[in-house]
Image (cartoon, rainbow, N blue to C red; front, top):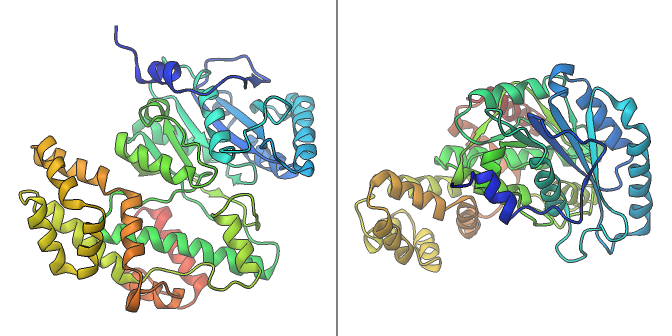
Amino acid sequence: MKKSPISSYLDKRALTAPWRIEGSERNNFAAAVVIPSLAEGDSLLATLASLAANPADLLAQALVLVVVNHRADAAETDRLANRADLQRLRQQAPGLRPLQLAWVDAASAGLELPAKGGGVGLARKIGFDLALTRLDLRQPSPFLVALDADTLVRPDYLPALYRHFQSATAGGAVLPFEHQNGDSAAEQDAIERYELFLRHYVLGLKLAGSPYAFHTIGSALACRAEAYARAGGMNRRPAGEDFYFLQQLAKTSGVTQLRGTLVCPSARPSGRTPFGTGRSVARLVAGETDAVTFYHPDCFRILGRWLQLVSGRLDLDGDQLAREAAVIGAELADHLHKVDFTTAWDRLRSNHPRPEALLKAFNDWFDGLGSLRLIHHLSHGHRSRCQPQDSLPELLQWARLEDAGDLAGQLRTLRKHQRSGI
């Protein structure tokens, strides 16, 4: 008898030992919220408190799994903080009802993450893989949710998730998000600029017609259990794990935008990862004004013309498509040559004779990372990375969205745009 995708994943790819779930023996949950935590202290308690404000009947069906973790080369301050957090979880778990709270010790001797390759991706994977074993797979759509230990959610968080996965056709979902306010004017300016950067990029992808036009925020994603298994599980990267995982979800089960709630990640500066929100905010607060620059709208226009060319001329061979791409622009043709597009395209045509299958195969090959690499290749000369005022007005006009004229107003516009799903 053929195994289910989840059974096959658990047998072949799941990462469990030597870690284990503490605090709960139940194995009949309809959902699991997985929270990696590194020296979070009161921030973790605030996150749990925001979760606890959700409806009690839905909380009763959802495992909340905290993965307290650090690497083997962690600083002593992080080790002590994690030890305190584990102690607090063990002592206070009964008082945190109605949460179905459990935790994983990935911080004690013999359980620490490896110095090489350890990080948030591995911590998420440990939590997801262990949580998968506690879901009731007899239910129609058990699902997994990623959250962070410094992120706040609203009381409509779980209702929106349950509602979404009862009807959505795609296996993956991204949630609306807005960063918390910074602790100072400098932090506030930094987080607004960084969030605006994230939003302008996804808007540009959407305008270009990319199937990867969704946000990749680690604390604002979810997926059905089966979709998780089909995607091969969480990516282990110490940074960017959310990007690569969602990209794989998009290829294997699809990703859609969830509605009806809001996730609020932290705005704090941080150096825990080599890139991302905390690192970018820290650099901006330190006065590095070029730490976050924006893409020229023409980069997205060229991407859009390229995607439109391929989807409209599936009958052409690789050389013919490359010649048509050169008409769009020499830089596009140069990039396609560098990635050996003609060879890849002819192979795809040979393996996928039906048009819809060929287009799907192309989008799997020219994926979110492929699109980002093209945009980087195009970002020179008059299309070089620029300040927001040199990118956003044109993008907003292209999208027929209101331009308030300042960064705060433009951010409000794009936040509303994500929530509305227009």
